[in-house]
Length: 410
Image (cartoon, rainbow, N blue to C red; front, side, top):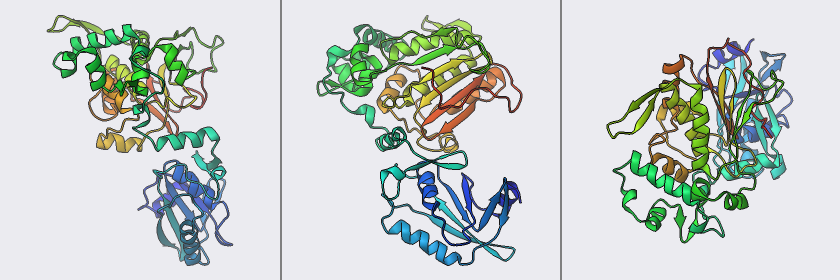
């Protein structure tokens, strides 16, 4: 049977991912690799009693499904894994043959491994792959989701802030959010209230957002946000590589404006004067790009060797961000969840009205871009990265638009 036919027979399962195993001679040894991979990625179902051959599935059934189930539960509870894996089991009788379905949820305590850390696996496509050291480090950092950039950056102080950036930030706040209470405070109280400075030191968020580049690089040696303009629809169909690459800037506040000035050239805007007398550029396309840019800067994992990167192709703009999502994309969208990786950085953007006050801004990106260009954004999500693609023109379904998301510009 085909995959669709198999899913139809097991229609009550919520298909996030699955792996079939014939298990004719008992529990396969690679079962634990898959348990680890599902736990470390997005969860999924293990289906025992089904054989796969060249993309088709044959229901063979299990000779002793109770023993397979007991072996799984016993091994999980015996301490083979570093954390407890709460599985869910369902048996199916299909044409007189028993199939055992075991659901393995994504874990909050990654990396999940058996026997030793070297036995940590992740799910890539339909296969289990041993996690690299960088990937297990990423999973360990994800346990500090929402807290890492709120920690204090050692050996820093207010003197490590970039004075011009700080003054521009305070002026921008006064202009675009004049009723916020923070603008009434003197500089020291302003920095303390926003937790840019805490106990005499900069938080990592404060350092990244408004710090001097020299100081940032002591803690983040290769700090940068990449923006490249590429004369082609993919990186492989151009002979020049790129025609523009963004220079280095002091901090996230400066990078935001440098990136935005380049990006806004790619959409049409209408210029209007606000009731306060300020100039304002109006365009749903501009709003989608702004939200995508801020979303990228707010939710990046700044402790990974990878970098946030924007690539402007001839037919689409691609926002690549190191760091996976805390929940599946559809759940974030449907529940409008606000689970920022870097809550202090998020607040610093939101307090000057450069970002949404709730959620991930996905709905705002989608609504504005569809209104502007009649195309929906595309997403490429993995456990350690997120890509949003905004098409500047319609492309044929299935057309290749970029290479593998893991590849980075050097």
